[in-house]
Image (tube, rainbow, N blue to C red; front, top):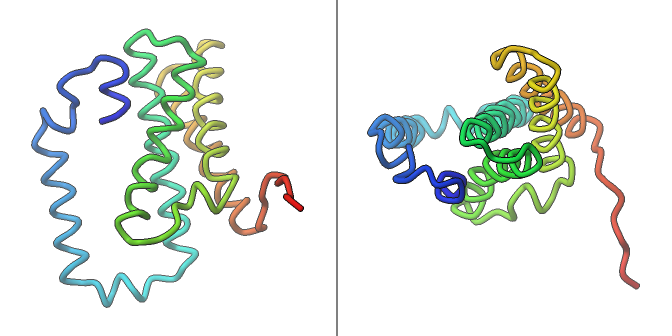
Amino acid sequence: MVRDLLIGAVPPESIKNWRYAATAFGAAMLTFFFYRMVESFPARLLMGLDAGGLALFAVAGTEKALDYNIHPFMAALLGTITGVGGGTIRDIFLAHVPRVLQSDIYATAALLGAVVLIAARKIGASPVAAAFAGGGACLVLRVVAALLNWNLPRIVNN
């Protein structure tokens, strides 16, 4: 919604289209009734699903910004915001520190996916191929970074 408001796509698609709310409420109801099963999911599976969601949202956000003729640099930033925004809100609702503040590679993976998508489009790849390339790059970086505990360098305050 934030991305749509920033690019002038009003009202946001998530408000115009009832399917967004129905999907969210349906998933919430399934989780409510089957929470014991969800709790038993392995952590790596949940991390992989989260990485997939990050990739999908980063790619979708970048594509929508490009469709609205937003400059590619800003489209990459909007794709990154779209990718990390939903997870950040989720973590806040769950009373967790947002993952984007814990794992430096989280937002970096979304940005990489957006940049790869834009680069692929610039060299003439079809929108579908570019989306798969960007989403794949985001997914692979996020999963590998999580499995190998990669982080970006941090400044240490003394």
